[in-house]
Every structure is written in C-alpha cells, then in structure tokens.
Image 1: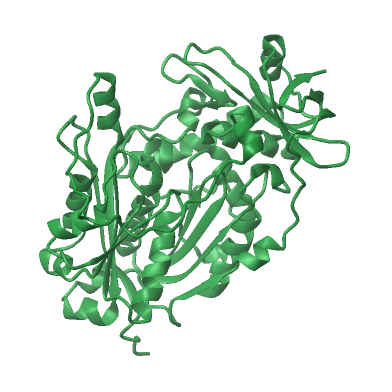
Image 2 (image 1 turned 90 degrees about the vertical axis):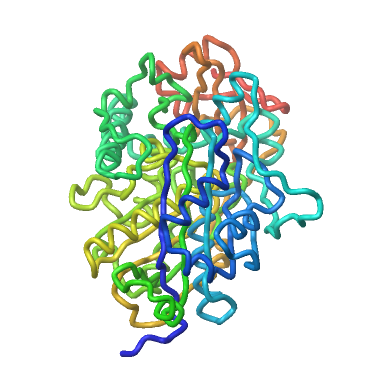
Length: 490
C-alpha cells in the first residue's frame, strides 16, 4: 500500500549532555547542539515551525526564534509552551496533525536546561548569562498556564511535587496492604532496575547502576526528602541537557533525502488531564486520565499491550510509574520489557519539562536499531495531572496518524468533594512527612477523609506526632482538623 505523502514521520532526534562546568553555556546552546545532532543543515534549513518546551533555567522572549536563527531557518514560525512534563509528547501529537493536514512541512521540537550550571553559579553569587532579546522581539505565542494547586493546598504549603507524589505512594501501599518496610524495599528494587537501564543508555546523565538498598535506605548522599522517598527516588533536575525532535511528511523526507533507516512513524496519540485539584481526586492511587487516554491510544493504533516491545513510562517518582502501569496493565517487573528505555528522570536526567523529548529520542534510536517493533511513550505533567501518549514504529502505519480528544470521557469519572476550611475529626487517608536538610522530619501533610466521605487537606506540626508518622502506620488514624488546615493526630 502506497503511503499518503502527508503521512507524518519522525526523522530527527538528537540529545546532548554538558557534564563539564561551562558558565558561558545557555539553554539555546544545548538546543542548537541537539538540533545539529538530529539533522543536517539542509533539513534544519527547511524547518518551518520551531516549538520549544518551557524553560526554567533562563527566560527568553522567544527562544524558538533564537534557535531558528541559529539553525538557518529564521522565517520559521515559533511557539512556546506552558510548563508540564507532558508537553513534548503533546507537541508531537499536534505536529503530526499539522503535517498531516498540510499546515506545516517540517516541525522542530526543542528543549534544553542548564539548571546544574545555573545552580552552581547561584551558589557563588553569580547569574547565568543568556542571549538578550530586546522588546522589539514579541513574546512567543503560548497556551495559558494551569494552576496546579488550589487554595487548600496553598494554605498548608502542599505545593511541591516532591511532597505530593509521596502521598500517592502511601496510597498505593495502603491499597496493596503492604507493610511500610516491605513497600520501601520493593520500590527501591523498581528504581534499581531503572538505574540498570540508565547504565546502558549512552545519553543518560548518570550511568551507574545503584543497588536497591542504596536507593530506599537514607544515607549521607541519599537523604530523606519526604517520607517514604529518599533523594534517589526523586527526579534529578541538576542536569545540563538538551534534546530536539524533527518531524516532517513522507513526501518532504523523501525530497530532503533523509535516509529511510532513520524514519520512525507515530501511529497514534492522545491527550487528557485528570482533575487538577488533588483534593478532588477519587483516589490518590489511580488516574482516570491515564486509564482512558492510555488505553485509547492503543486502540487507535490497533495494537495491544502485549504487542509493545518497548515502553517508557514517565518516571518523575516511583508512584507515577506504578499508577501508570496499573492503569495500562503493564507489569512492573518484566525483565524483557522494563518500563523505561532511558533509565528514568532520576538517573537519565530530569530536565524539568523536557524529559520526554529525551525519551522519544531514545525510543527512536531503540526502534531504528531493531526495526519493526512497537514502542509506547507516556508523559505526565503536574501532580499526575496532564497526560500525553504516543505509539511509534519503524513500520509504516496501516492508517493515517490518529489522535482523539478523550477529555469528556475522563470528565465523566467520579470525583470527591474537596472541603476547603473544613473542621472536625476524620481519618487519615494518606500522608507524607517532609524532612529538612539536616535529616530531621519537619511536619506531616495529611489527606483526611471526613465522616461524610469528602476530603480535607491538612498539616500536622506537633513534633512528637511528626515522629510517630514515620515510626507507625497511621493510615486510618483519627485526626482533628481546624479551619486553617492545621491538624493533630489522636
């Protein structure tokens, strides 16, 4: 069957790491280097759209314009995204639709962070310098941001992902009926398997396999961040990394003489979001959006879970992997199909909003090295909030690229009433205990189920109760909440 000339195809994928300290390097430098690793000058010059994932290391008025000028495509349209780890796969989905419908011919997706360099400079009282764009350069077009935290979360200070995801982890443990130490040991083993994948990934930031007990047990270089997560169970944003993806049509790829062995076809994509406020989630141990959108992308591609040879599940924290695996029916411990192709955000690197550009690039390398296989990419932004999925293969698809908006189905899922300012006595549903840099527990964030079945979020500050929250399993314990969100365990 002849391919439709407008069939979208991924033809360029480049990644760079900057391990040597270079205070003169900025994000656009890494994006340019990744672009040149992804394609030759003829392809780069043909780019008509540059779309950049939100940058945190440095702010530009229009980073896409800077990159377009550097790669010889100064007339390319530009776009800048909101924050979210889901962004790169979502950009691929949109690029495929734009190419398929003739709106664009060559789309470049880029992201880069020099957070490690920025942090080191800041520790010395210096600032990361960047290319200036004066006010004559319009701000790049972007979609509106969404609020990750609502008034109840902000009131008690529950805003950091490193505090929210451990609450999901405790909910998973409670639902599984596991003992705390058994559970910590198990997720240490899961993360150790990820580190072994990173060991074999030439693009990984850290290529050292780590034993499970060195992951789940705190130590001098692996402090407890928020119970039950140590530092090695958190995404590692202390990296300088860049990645670029280039998509075009089959017709244009042929015209540009891009070798066929570099072609990777996106089969299908989906995007959806869960209820943004975590207090309204039906369960802290599940994700309707992952279940609905993840299963739908498989249906659109005409494949099943067992057909997938390679998978990269978004892995900012162990709970994100476990929830996605549960919702998609993926085993956690299949030695023939680990749940990452990169090694995950702890070991391969977590460059804020751009990790998935790296996972897609690594997936493309994996698929072209072993043609004919199928790969799944999952992407997650916020607190298990925004989700994007893609299916890839070197084999041409039987149908055109397919994307579907499944949000209405997700919105029909049940939610919980979130009580803001509630007071009374309820029970602990899940919790986490943040630690300070000296290794001392500071407080306890608790999700509380009220007698009516609604949910309140609260914080416990009494140090004896804080200590008890890591010595004892307080799931189901009585807790009294005041209107300001402070609480005490009974």
